[in-house]
Every structure is written in C-alpha cells, then in structure tokens.
Image (cartoon, rainbow, N blue to C red; front, top):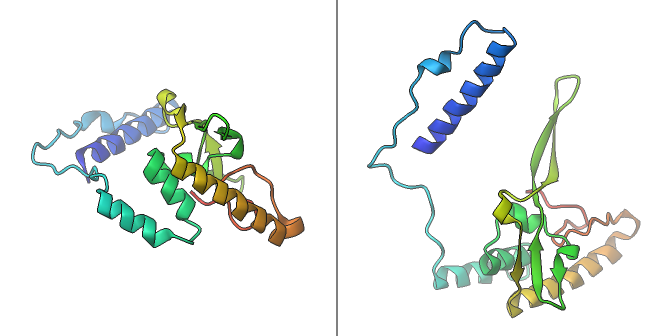
Length: 181
C-alpha cells in the first residue's frame, strides 16, 4: 500500500476508535499510540501518466460503436472524472453556448437496512471539490458525440416503450436508468 493509503487507513481507524471511546465502548484509543507512517523517499508514485496521442487514438478506435464510445470521448476531450461523466444530465448541456456544466457526480452508495443487510445503489453527490463544479467549453467533436448520444437515447426510448425510465442522464442503460459508476 502507498504511504497515503496507510495514512488514510490510520486516520479512519483513529476516528472510529475516538467515536467508540466517546460512547464508552472502549477505555482508550489504541490508534493514538501508533505513529503515522512516514513518506518513503523511494516510493514509486501510483499516479498514471496521461495517454499519449497514439494511445488515445487506439482507445477511441476500440470503443467505436459500443456503449462506451460517448463516455470515452467525453473523458478524453473534457478531462472529466468517471463519476462526473455519469452524473451529466442533458440540462447540464447548453448547445447554443456550446458549454457543459459539471454539477454532480454519480457514485456508488450503500445503505445499511434495519435487519443489518446492506443495499448498494447509485446516487448523485455534489462534485468532489468546490472547484470541481465548473462550466467548460465544448469542442466540436464532443458536440457531435452528444448529438449522437441524443439519437441513441431516442432509439432506446422507442425500444423500451413503457419501461423507459426518464432520468435526464446523458449516459444511461437501455431503459434510461443511470449507469453503474
């Protein structure tokens, strides 16, 4: 695990034990005695280098005609996170001004039910940071992809008929529901 991951795990355990201490489930916080790991100077970064032109072209070629085509184009041309792309709604697009607004993310959420079982679902959240909420200019290629996505949605809506679930999401499953993040 990277040093940052270990620090986050320690921090979460510390908070968990602090909460248990506050509710008197435990007598002391054992994590308070553990020093946070130091950053190793020889540690190799897990941050991936961006795709070069040939890699990006190969990726785009590999998804032509698939359900991922629009998503991959938006990711490569707009630099959006996966959750930001899946959270895009048609109301976020202004074709006249040629802009796209990032207003939400779609992410996996879970709920613990009264019987103790868990339920996993997709839910929308505000963007990751305050600066993540933004409006971006749409390049011609993305306008074309979004117009194509509109046609795909219209075909899917006709096929689904009464089963269509109108969500306003741009990238949906065959019945109009959100894609799994």
